[in-house]
Length: 336
Image (cartoon, one colour):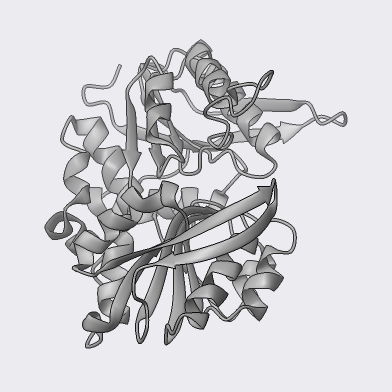
């Protein structure tokens, strides 16, 4: 066993660009080369997943980099199988770095005879031999309690705050943070406090599932540059509608800051054609070609904060310190 156990990274296929970026940032922070462990994560002809690790990982502190985004089932199975391979190879500790935690929207029973799939996934992760989870902006904070292992939940709002203060420099008095629904008020309030901006809410009423009957703006948005903040943007229907309502209530422009750009189906086309001036997402989910080429979609990097969080977990220092602007600011200096 080595005298000093170094953190070692291994990645699945879900978001290789982010995994490589995290390795590069860790190399910069450590002043020594940190690469991805040589391994293959492949599929047999029947799409059965196979993992083989080519390097010795006995006694090592391992970090699996794998969001469980689309295709959620394949990426989740890759994560579990990689964990099993490392556990059977005698790794000393296995941490799952899951920038986007899939199935998080199924965190409670909304009607009879439905599952709580987020809890099921938490059980599977634990049983696979994973001893710690590092993620970002869980859809519901209580999901941390579904695990019987430590969970570090990073927040995108400190990164968003740094970007907003730069993008709207000189116009801070015109900025207003908007929650797209009542359930997201706590998240929006947190960002509003960071940038010292007022808060508004778009309250929506549904007549039946999937159809919004009415949207009401709570707060005065006339003459304001509105920033909608949320954790997930899936089909972008509600987001684009909220932007229209805000413009109709006198907002001068509308921007959106969303942590996880799921952007499925017609989402990118909707955003392109919407009244929103910009949609800012993170790279927690690998960007598709449509996302990368959309003129009004911008992607913020999460590699700096994930790399530092991994190092803090490895050396036993505080992860929550990364939520402070004076700590996070230098990490993102020259990037945002």
